[in-house]
Amino acid sequence: MTTFAESSTSPSASDRTAPPADELVAAGQPATVEPTAVDTVDFASLGLPDALVRALARQGITTPFEIQRATMPDALAGRDVLGRGQTGSGKTLAFGLPLLARMAERNRARPLYPRALVLVPTRELAMQVNDALVPLGKAVGVFLKTAVGGVPYDRQIDALRRGVEIVVATPGRLGDLINRGVCRLDDIEITVLDEADQMADMGFLPEVTELLAKTPADSQRLLFSATLDRDVDALVKRFLTDPVTHSTAPSTASVSTMDHHMLLIPPHDKFPVAASIAAREGRTMVFARTQLGVDRLVEQLAAVGVRAGGLHGGKTQRMRTKTLAEFKEGRMNVLVATDVAARGIHVDGVSLVLHVDPPKDPKDYLHRAGRTARAGESGAVATLVLPKQRRTTLAMLEKAGVAPAETRVRAGDPALTELIGAREPSGVPVRAEPEPRRHSDRSGGPRRFGDRSDRGDRRFGDRSGEGRSYGDRGPRGYGDRPTGGRGYGDRPTDSRSYGDRPQGDRRYGDRPAEGRSYGDRPQGDRRYGDRPTESRSYGDRPTENRSYGDRPQGDRRYGDRPTESRSYGDRGGFRSEGRGRDDRPRDERRGFGGRPPARTH
Image 1 (cartoon, rainbow, N blue to C red):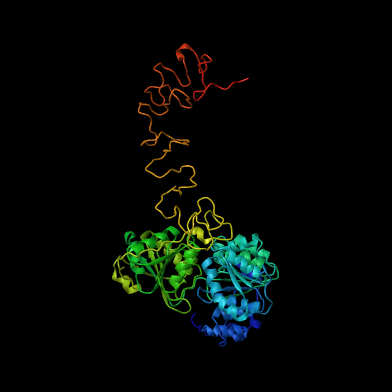
Image 2 (cartoon, rainbow, N blue to C red; image 1 turned 90 degrees about the vertical axis):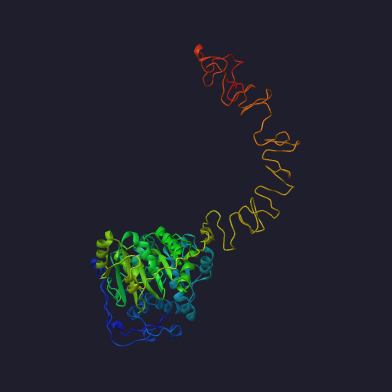
């Protein structure tokens, strides 16, 4: 994490006046308390415990960000806070440090009763918050645990049963844990909503409202987001008491170290241009509108020699975590993602954000663009725009407060290299790694058919050595058999069951002469369906012991009838004689299948 270097400070608590909650959200625009530059402060002067200050110093963090200076005194004092700051401005530590400081002052949490809750919209953001706060929590003896979907329940439940102070959760998984009776919110002292506007946009508002209603009414609430608009009004009015609002940037602001480009391209040049940009030096995040678009672009880039990873909600959590780790560690320079999956993700050193599909919402544009130029770094944002998209894209950018530089380009245009460092891909296909099976990512909860816990890379039908049932095998895959070259259905020579045969070149239906059962035939080199040499067809049987479908002997075929014109069901008579279906002598009538009809009374 880079060292923070800011010069402005927040006003003292005595200088702030918290307007009423109903005035904060009037016309969808919360009232703000703008920080003023007085003098340089450090974390110790904000009231953080010495143990946290030392832990921050070990990470090279000595000077707080503007949003941190503005909100931390009020958060440490126990007040409800609305914090708005541009993405990458340090909101995680702005709520995380006061959270850890207040939790360190009290005793350990009771089993199943966490004392603080952080709600976030996505799994990746939950893990990012957890990774940022866990090392600091260890310094003050505060334990954290993530509760997100797509991963086994077991470890989350075990941590809650041991007692954990802070739970970082997505609304869906936290609701599941509460319904299972393994998490209760009666002891919650502080609740944090991070990326609150995104949770509202994603449809989490009902779940978030239900969860907040389960927390004590007098507990502290902190709400942080890049924008505070009408979508969060209901939460603010219902759950925040006399909140103080801090805003470090207007919702339409773009970072001064960020360049915006609108590249006007012909439709048939869209992928070649995108591929040349993805092949550039440096770390690049590419955004597509749909999950299918992400997967298709990753495959197309791999085919021309650009290794890229896909990130969207349709992938397993294991694959999402692995892809993001490779991107953060520099083993892969291109990450293709949807808006939802990449919301709030922080990756150092992203020098370019490429919109392959222009976003329709200005907030989505700002959040996408916010993946670059973070923490004072420089970066660029490029949007590929087809001729028919130009007018709507310009209108969206105007609402976002962005005035991009428009450039008409084609595939191979030198302007692409000059503007954003594009270069031709190698053309050598990249071998894609197979994605693990989705069902292996679940355990301990309502698992799907075939799910296993994390006990190895076993396949469908695998079981451990004990308690195995039909079809069980050891660590072999589906259809594996013991050695010896036996095929499907082979059994050892003893304990054979239905369908077993002695060794030899016999075919299906062959049986030994003795003990034959269903489907047995006389010995010989006959095949399935073979009949004696006389020319009988389907349904032919000897005259004795005939059953369903039996016919008199002769060279008749299936469905053949005597030459006289009889209809369905007729036996021994003619329609022309005016006799119906059952108008036959009693001894000539037979039921279906050639048997006498059942007696009736």
